Length: 188
Image 1 (cartoon, helix red, strand yellow):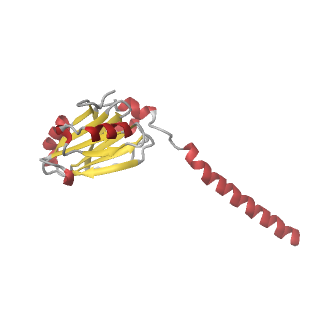
Image 2: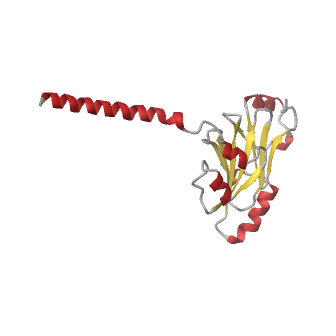
Image 3: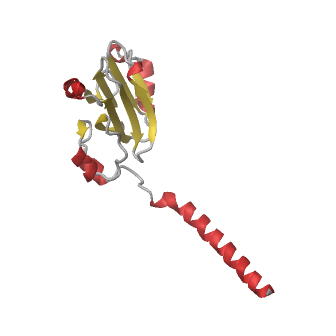
């Protein structure tokens, strides 16, 4: 009977060890950076509307709310900063910045807009130093977000539960800006 209890204790300790090992190895098998399917769908430095076919082609993007319209801007701030600007009047809007591991790092919404423009500048450490030296007039009212990795995604979402908003949403996305910020001394 005693040897049976030792075997049971040994089996229990082995099971605990295997479970702990499995939990510690999970991060190793997760996506390490922006996957190739996302890079193929969303060109760098360009605003792309997120449609159903994009979601099917990029399984890493999931769980989007059907009451919102989405657009994605893939950025690379290794050379220069990235500017995202939307002209938003009354539609609830949010910009979420993701790093290259698709973890959200910053978020802002339409409550932060100035003069009906929601402007975001994504920068790296070296850009922050250059911007502190001389802040260009065009980005005085922008929100600055420091990217923890040089590449990532900015996801823009606009509330679209009412069909009457579709023309206004299309106009916002058509006039949206997702460009490298080249003014001043930010470029190498």
